[in-house]
Length: 458
Image (cartoon, rainbow, N blue to C red; front, side):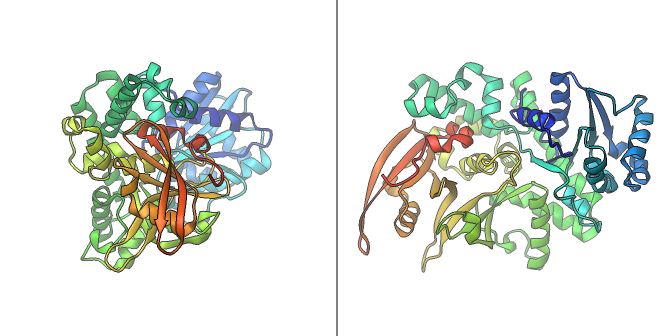
């Protein structure tokens, strides 16, 4: 299965000012496979060292001497890792924190050697050490789960051919639309963890996919024991199990544990966020660009790592999901919000720190909330995940009027449509905005959002 991130790794490799590359992401999202596939496709000699299996190398890396390090690694692999057409891959780098600190010296003293590393739960490790990541001396890539576009390409290359903003906006046949929505339904169950995707592609067996989900979920729980023990471990496991049940809800610490202080719960959630197990969606007042300038970090909701794992954790079986009609698929629980969110989270590209915002207005009796808010050029664009008619989106209408926004985006189960919506506001008079409705599968074109919504006023 081809990952589009491989193209980005190639750009890094060919760069004239190449820094050591650190691929960051949650466990089992395909970081190691990405590097191996890239090396194989480019015909490179891959010098791979799994540091979890070579913990004794900590002493060598602590010298911060890249020449000595290369000599030692060459002896381990029985070949010169400095040879042409080679790539040095330090896998599970979090197992030897000294190696993280040593990366800066590869850039400064041996820049000709292409060095790529990968690690999960890096922040858990760094929290126990005094040094920080070598900012300015390394390049970071943020890898998430398999996207729907990658899944569709592997599952049905013909239908995947329709997945361009241009084709979706131009209109596709009912048969193609129905086929893509069926693929969305399958993706909701399978999710984007590479092993689960490959299992589905190889077998089409829902039970086998669920077994993969169970294995991955339990692996995460087991991993926490490496970084905590006793009461702290119990709290970490408890919160990890609770996050999938509260996807899309404003974080209230009492929902995760009534027995622990808010500061304890907040600390664990922050670690999960740093480790990409949970993705924060932070409230922004959205008065202008950039959105993060008006963030309120203490007001946030969470989405989970992956929609397939979320549904597994919540006990939603494949047969039940496949039986849902399209309207229920969008509105039932938080599936569609998770699906859209995990794609929008990485919409700015793999070399940018992932982030996502939403908008919340507290009312006397009920709050108004818009699922997501994104930037488009110099404009703020509210994003809703709905299946109903435009007139039913009260929160979006409230935000549009209050912020005087001219464009809004909706993801739903219908085909692409653009409509001008008129609002009669008692305080501000008549206001018209353009609502672009995009089918759920259109979110995989996150880098082409400009083809869906305009730049300025209608």
